[in-house]
Length: 376
Image 1 (cartoon, rainbow, N blue to C red):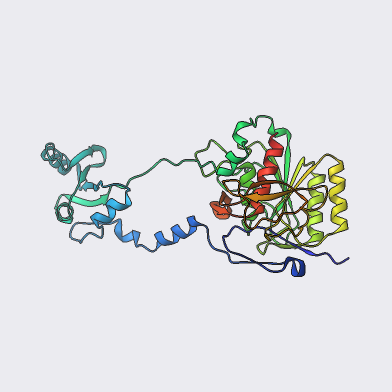
Image 2: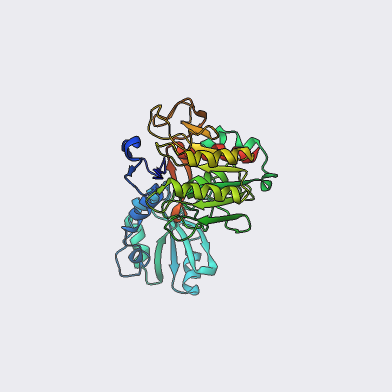
């Protein structure tokens, strides 16, 4: 039998160019780095090594107005480091009534000062007793974001203390096990690889890591995002069927699906699809359904009433997409096999490289439903 090719229905990028799914079952994807990566690249354009050394006799590379704007307020604070403790103490006595002094750090021989002009800053840089002057950069608390989809599906209203009794199997592109916001214990997260890539616990595409984060990103750690199941105790079984390209044959997907069943999954999520029916795949899903396993899949991103598989098999819960106002996502497929809709626009979740990314598509809607199913 010639098996059709299935595709990941939503890659983590705002630009998707779909070809005729019925004719080719292929997707063209214009990959763009997540916002965090773009920001990092722009930061690297500056020469930070030189800026960290403002020694006496060198003209400062700091611009006082730029320092103020980058700090997020109008404060122009600097750390003035003296060459030795005696020189620091002498200066500290002189600065007691100086309005430029904010505070001192005696153990470090540092005065914290504010300067209103380049001339004032240069004066201190040029002093014989000063080793260097550097900006007193503002810092902020790291915090955790609750993606709107988590609130949309009322996940936080349901306790997750009993979730360790459930196992969710994710058939996708893998799982970045070292991501700081995902569970890394192999006693809780297990998996198997059917892709051409290395291991189930790597993710060259990023799609599977995004899906996993929506289901089970860890809450209460002051990092990143929160998943539907947030206590880090949800048993996940990761079945990797896609490599970096995001394409695989139906036969590979069937292998991965049966691995979920063998692993004892209660819920199986498949954020993937194609336009061709397979009797073999339908039979496998029907058998799983008869064993009491809930199978959840993305309805598809063609924006038409065309049926996509596996979502349109009778024993699958097909998930369409809506936005934060519960309006239909423009790319979501709609037909008589759709059972439910979930957030599919601007969904923030974990991503490869320890990053986070926002994504559109029914691929990101499906894990909301799978997560809630395991939660309740």
